[in-house]
Amino acid sequence: MKHNFWIMQQSWEDLVFIHWPVPVKLLRPFVPSPFEIDQFDGTAWIAIVPFHMNHIQFRGIPLIPFQNRMLELNVRTYVKYRNETGVYFFSLDADHRFGVFLARTLFGLPYLNAHMRMEKHLDHLLYMSRRVHSGYEQVHFHCSVSIDSPLPPSKPGSLIYWLTERYALWAVRGSKVYKGPILHQHWNLQKAEAEIMTNHLLDFLPAPLLTHDPIVHYSQSLKTRIYPFIKMQ
Image (cartoon, rainbow, N blue to C red; front, side, top):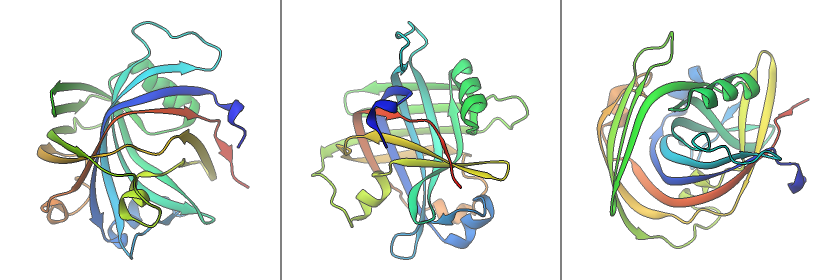
């Protein structure tokens, strides 16, 4: 990948990874058949990731005031395609109607309109979201996050590295598979705890799977560059 071919740059701020282990057989019906579900020690994982996307800028276009930021809340798992690893998104809720329109139209990603709010008080975050996309149920999500101490850099082979250091997203459009490369530095993560008050984002999974505490990590800020989707042969 040539680093001068990026098409968009942005920063991800106050991002929280909320992960649960999930048996592969329960995810398989919801992941397109071209993808192999990636596993760590024989277990698949699913994540809810709320964050603030800021400084959104297309290559060659100046920042547009009041249009270069949005809140996002995505649901993701991890897949392989021809032994290349990456992220597969079940949904991406956002509070930016034009951004949702562009992402759905240009990239074919399952972005959905939502009313969202994030509040930050010292080391405490509050995320609230209600999906309002036409033709979809009004899915709600509400959680509070307590941020703890910084973690040392994760090492290849560790679970944290496996969950977070992903540099491609995968999508299917019709019968074709597409890869979306993403470039960023390694995550600077902190310990965190999440109290989830309302969560209908994962209603397609059996409720008992989510009764145990998730693994939670926080990142204050990360700059990223997005590259054109590649149609796989």
